[in-house]
Length: 351
Image 1 (tube, rainbow, N blue to C red):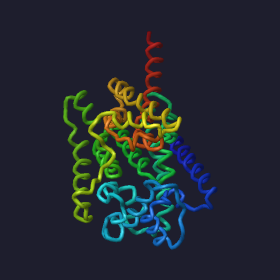
Image 2: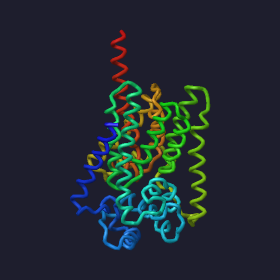
Image 3: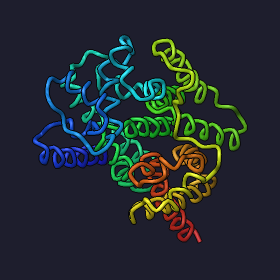
Image 4: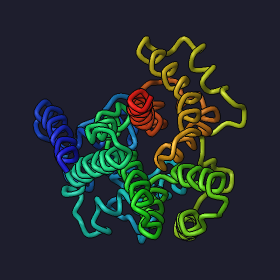
């Protein structure tokens, strides 16, 4: 519990620091873009005041603000139609559903709850990783590998959904450690409804389960797939999606082409190159570690290592974006590094 409280404290302090520099206006997190007039006008109309903006197009928070005002898509013409890719954005429903209190919260309240929800889940995710670490004999302070993950902190600063989705995945992995598969299934379903990419996390837990235990974990894997599928159908019933409008722009069929383009484009800064190369290394290291591990969280993270080569240039080109996309790899790498040291120490004592 201490680790979770510390993680919440870290989140609160970082939020206070940002708010203090921007006149305590929570729209600094919502990341409306100064060159994105549609969502900007929407927000100013809803709030009845000017909002703070980020350069260019802004970031994901502006879309979650729109969704939180109508999370169940009951008035798509007034809300979902504002989104750049309505079906893609609306698929990620749980974070705005919570922040918007299922559509009951006012727009002004939502600007605060989007931040608050992320801070709370920063603590929950850290607590879950700490509990997993303890169950495998290492310090619970390993849980701070969640709270101090640069990709997740980036999500905090733009009202992104990555903290909630990965925290739910970590809680699901903890539920499996405690032999509560029903609870794990519910938590994994929540993670996938927050970010559909979490289906790969669940898929690789199922994969390692099958390989190690020679049985198919239907209860763990099926509910999240069904829930995501049913919500996708509902979204397409509620939202008019043009047939010729691409909804997914983050995936390519040519492995590593996005990463190579990012490294050779000349657009990246030094920090971008460092982060890209580090994450590219983790794409190979984490699966090796996980293949020798009995930690469910590590098994799930392999899904992101498999997904990474198929991410486009637009995801790989900046450290800010790729660190968010592959955030589970960083947390699991730290966890597995500490576990390896513990195993080595145990072996030395035995010998």
